[in-house]
Amino acid sequence: MRITKHGHACLELEKGDQRIIIDPGFYTEPLTEMKNVVALVLTHMHDDHCYAEQVDRLAATNPGLLIFGTDEVRAKLDGRNVTAVHHGDWHKVGNFELEFFGDMHQEIHRSIPLIQNTGVMVDNRLYYPGDSYTQPDRAVEILACPTSAPWLKIGDVMDFVASVKPRKSFATHNALLSDFGHALNNGRVKMVTEQGSGEFTYLEVGQSLEL
Image (cartoon, rainbow, N blue to C red; front, side, top):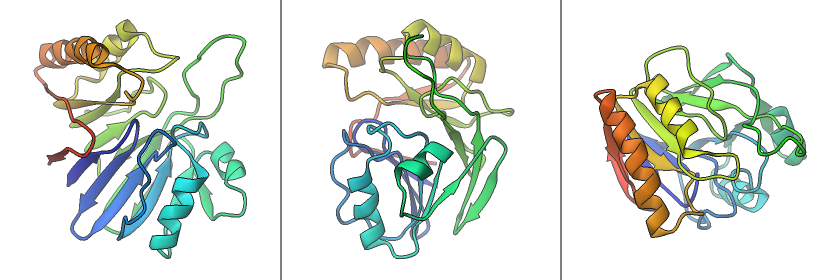
């Protein structure tokens, strides 16, 4: 499987001649010519993860595209064919297996209502928690780790990585960081990943990892 990081929280996963896209939001470059996409996963309804223009671009170039998201994602994308997913759901889509974990977005502030969020495990190898610290019930080969957000404190991220103990990790959800912020937060995630005998990689937008 090949993993390519796009802007902010968006990931492209390739296996054989098929692709899955996760969380193309409004901080992600327009995905205008993406072909052979069999599934789109939207972890929650916030625009930096679930942006209708991106969804429509992908649907236009990929007839039969399957879309998975929370109940709130399905309501937001009314008129589009979205399959609602919940904790414990499992779907086989083309060359990929998708399993979903958790129910709620991390708290931003007590005055802001919580929304739904789903983490996703792909092929029992890559885990992306969306905007949460939801831990899967098994070992994680590679963790797509959020490193910047209004809801995020780097100490909590470090505790999350220490608990998950991934064999590999890389930073995502990081469009709001300066170069100084990347250096600081990536250094913390790298340190904790390596303490668990794992390996951290920093991917620039457009760079890929091979599994």
